[in-house]
Length: 373
Ligand SMILES: [Fe+2]
Ligand SMILES: [Fe+2]
Image (cartoon, rainbow, N blue to C red; front, side, top):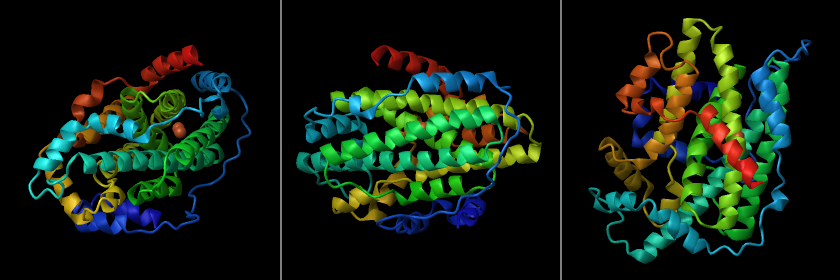
């Protein structure tokens, strides 16, 4: 399923049709577990020489920056409605757009509905963080097996531990502080399946370390900036310091690997990056939240499409502010004939190319985490 989905996605006429989005959204990933075939070979290297100092440095940092989830202030009394409304308040501009949109199904909503929507959205977001972290855990374990370089195997193994801890903290926060969790967003799981199912080791890196982690870092950063809830703020702070290291790992490794690829192989990577970006922008929606609120999924999808066409989706800025500079750093923007630069220009996000890239940001976050540890 993974191959088929990826290979045909960009060229498909129905890529942006409401029917195709709703069809993906209806996929059932099971109640107890979901199995996805892992692509690629387990690679054993006999070259144990440490020839990649940048990865070695990252590995040394990862070893001393481990933290224990038990040390977070779990006894904090969390007022979920307050936290959720605070986060929802930061999206007030979006709320106005939704109310005023043509054919809006939320025009009659008052404060009670919006407060409930804020709580459900908060719950949904943290639930997706949890499922996404498990995706990262599985992908990173695969990278340990498939990457041919010993320095990368060493580093990736520290990331496996980091991701386990991230799953642990989000699961515990959801379990102890919130009720009514959400199952994985189908569009997110489809993307994770494609990323872990690809037979080329570097595609799992690119899909997880650069694209999905780039998105996660933007989402964590937003929530960390807005919330004053001390447990959540500290939890996100710690997770973000790890995540920035993870994206840096992807950038350092792929920059080296891409330098040895042919133009045709680079184009495949550019297409993969662009497709993943579009899927994250257009297809990962909060259908389950709207449904709990009694709003029809098709109605809300239609409304969000209208808003996107008007260029008023604020989520887009956060998403691409990480992805575009990281693609630039990898040399993917201008490789070949600049195919990816042209695509990002067409969808109006090329201006983010000079936003701070994650390797630089990592130094800042890492220093901050060390100071607060
Ligand atoms: Fe993570
Ligand atoms: Fe990560």
